[in-house]
Length: 236
Image (cartoon, helix red, strand yellow):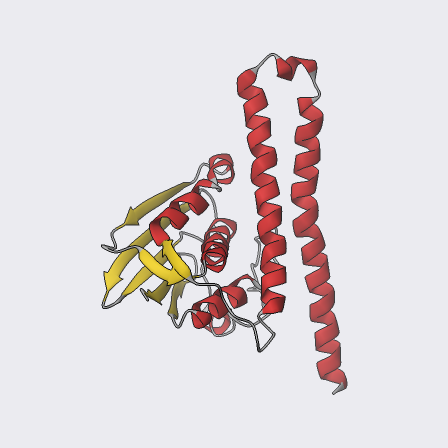
């Protein structure tokens, strides 16, 4: 009992530390961009001004998504939790979410390779949670890339379902760690990659969203090569 309590306390402390870091980073970036916008020389250069405005917008969206993931993950612990389904165009959600990472990818000289090949992209789902699911997958793919992120995003049609695949060229996950990645607060050790931060709830949230939509999730990964996540969701 004491050992279990100690483990829980340690996980809680790590979660708070990671959460603080994750939220402080966009706040600091927004603050710096705001200071730069006060510079008189920036007002005279529309291109530079537009770039700083985009940075503020991007970081604000990132912070909103982080907070939303925490809140929704907590709500899902309630047995009476229910999702709000409607017709959702998965391809539109993918493009919109991918576009929100443009500044981040540009700063890392990375790129998304998007191949939306599913014949019918309309699913009966909760748009908020599907958007958060895609955001978490893309965010992880970028975070765990070694250098320039090259991320392949694909959809394909199956029997009465659609499969979304996200493949990265990142550091990969060992077989031992692969067994635990969907556990709450679990974070894969990153070795020498010290700049990777997170709450340890992103993939747990993803797996819960998939389950609530009666879908399936599969992962393939190889250390030093990268990881592939495959999400299969029913159309109705």
